[in-house]
Length: 359
Ligand code: M6R
Image 1 (cartoon, rainbow, N blue to C red):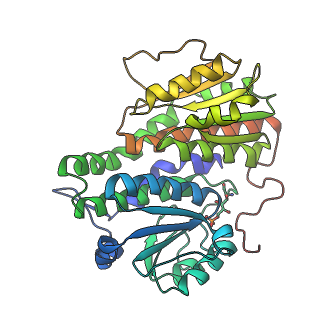
Image 2 (cartoon, helix red, strand yellow; image 1 turned 135 degrees about the vertical axis):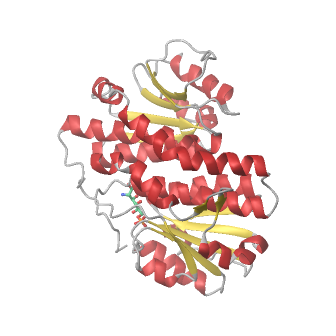
């Protein structure tokens, strides 16, 4: 898993390779070009996926709604397949899967096909069943992922989703040229930014050590960083067997706040985006109830507006859309070092299989 975490700059480059033309920089995804009319006319996108791929799909919902203004549903394949879903021919169904072999996602595709919508797959494994069962799609080019806990596939899924969303948004005139250029150029620079972040001193190792006796963790985020909170919590529970939950920070008062007691670790992902002040205020609420907060934010000369933060990690400044690529890295490392500290078999966690090909 550590190798795969550190491979991410290269994987991101591979996910971008050949998909951004130079002078001027323009996204060119052949499968999107071929079926652009379907995306331009789509009334709704329905993502179907499981686990980490579901978290990447949730991030895609934020991207597509914000940048392309197309309504999106994000479905757990395991639920979708047993519901009586409403699918229209103007819907695009987007199964997302690293392996391309997940049984629930395959069954959901089979059900969706009964309604005859356009199916556009997002897969890693070339030639996988899901890539064959869809009408078209895009490979994320993350390379073989061996660790059961998905890291580089998540990052590459998110890269591909952002490219798709911004390109569709630009064509639909929902994204102006300035925004488009900013995102495209920041995508091109992303491998460097991730590389620098990975090289930074190993503060996460010390943090994992300090939290090592914790039995419960909460992860909080808003906006683009809510899916990152869910993904951070999933990584921790999968390999370190610590109970962890991700929540939208704004949901705390609706129940989870009752869990906070002296010493409870809470990871707050609060980059300086439009949600910053609100998330910091949620953070203050948990600190005042005794939580030990790890704040993940981005570098800025502005103050943080809160005291008694236990630990803090600052990532580079970048557009809001790309911040999740940076905030997710320390969370992957936190899960890894927590499991390492406990001596667990990180690449083969108990009770789990890399590819869930049976129900
Ligand atoms: O191969 P898939 O992306 O379809 O797999 C879906 C999930 O089983 C997978 O993401 C799982 O949640 C990972 N172990 C998460 O790290």
